[in-house]
Image (cartoon, helix red, strand yellow):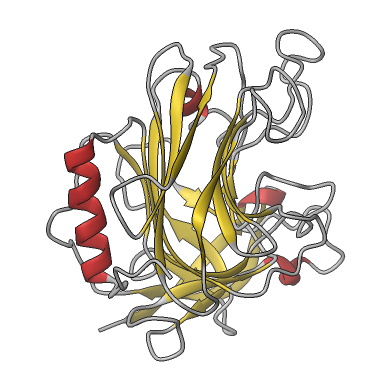
Length: 307
């Protein structure tokens, strides 16, 4: 059963300690059977580590993987006329899509301010991510760019040297028609959905207000390597090759948005709910993918029918 306690919270993104006392939501710890630990670097779980204000708006979401550099995900009010508009909402099991709590994003974001924690995932180690999610109508104005996470770089990676900083990193995005894609941008060129920035698009169109398990996987090595997307099944729906650029320099990880978009917060963002978000710094093998998909779909009561 959830319990509430009180603690002072620092607004990390502004480097100012707030004087407001927020209630902190701490749910009973759950450790679902079958969770693979090897390579796990990020576990964002609405049942644990969520801190809210009196209006149930999220002021901090804590990574449940101990010892990894990226610990706290907090609002980034820079660029917003009203900072509170950028805070997502905690939804209890009674109010959420599905049987467990979720975090609801309405063109809002939570950002981890470690600049380098996730860089290695696209420069050689490879990755696997899992997102238990429900989508709404997408309202952000940039066509087919409604990102539920991303660590893309805002500008030049090396002040004009090296790759040029063409928004390198990786991301998960919902299209206007609710197809979803897993993408890796290697920073060699800007062009969308090209050789260096493939949009690996699902065959499944996500129904609104229904939980899905979406996953992305990128191979390890010096490339070219495969990037794949999965929806409710451990068999990839589509894939593409991307060249690994060891000199790329991704940026901060944002949840609910494709990057720390201080120049236009909310414009390339996500409308929907996240029930769990997990990231590994390696490509899980096919047996591991099957184990994780089955475990997460069982826990979150995700139907095996993709839609």
